[in-house]
Length: 297
Image (cartoon, rainbow, N blue to C red; front, side, top):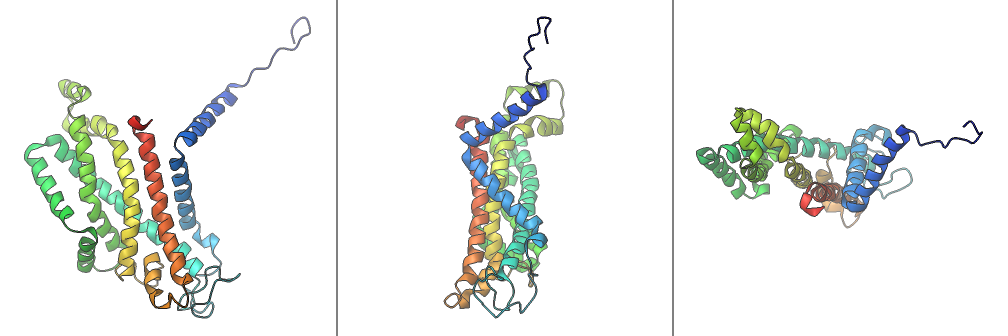
C-alpha cells in the first residue's frame, strides 16, 4: 500500500517469468518442427514399453499353454496366442527390449568407431585418408544384408553377436558422414587460430572440430537406428537373431508364416510393431535434421 492508500501493482515473480520462457520456446519448437515432436513421442512410448514391460503385461512371454494354439485376440489375450499358446501381447512388449537392446548399442558402437575413423581420415588426409576410406569402400561394396549374414554365420547367433554385426555394418557409412564435415571444418579460421597458439592435434579434434560436426552425426545415428531395427528383424526372421525363447519380432513373423491364412493376427501384430519402431526413429531423425540444420530454420 502507498501512503495514499492505493494498492501497489504486484509484478510477476522472476521465477514465473523464467518458467514462461521455456514454455514459449517449447511451443515455438513444436509449431516449427512437428516431426520432431511426433518422433520423440513415438520413440518415448517405445522406450517406456521396453523399460516398464514387467508392469504392463499380465502373462509371462515365456509361459506355454496360456491358451489354445493360435487362438484369436480376446479380452484376456489381447493379441491372441502363438503356436505354443504363449501370449502374443506379452511377447511383443518384451520384444521391444530385444529390439532396442540390439539396435541402439549397435549404432553407438558404429558411432564410436566411425567417428574415430572419420575424424582421422578427414583431418589428417593424405595416405591416412586413402587407406581408411578404401577399407570403408570395400565394406560398402557388399550388400548390407549379405554382409550381416556372413558375419553372423561366422560369429554364431546371439544377441551379443547380433549387436556386433549391426555395429560393424554401419561403421563405414558413419565414417563417411563424419569425414565430410571434418574436411570442411579443418579449413575454418578457428582451427587455424588453434594451431597458431600451439593447440595439439587431439585438443583441436575434441574441443574444436567435434562439437561443430555433431549435428549430422546425431541425425545419421537416429536414422541408422531405424535401419538397424529392420536388419535385426530380418536376421531374426532367418533364425540368426536372438536365440529362443527370447522374444523377437522377426522370429514371431517367421514362426507365423505357415499360419497366416488361418491366424493372420499372428503375423499382423509383430509386423506392425516393426513398422512402428522403424517409423518412430525415421520421424525423429527427420525432425532432428530440420531442427539442427541452420539452412532449414
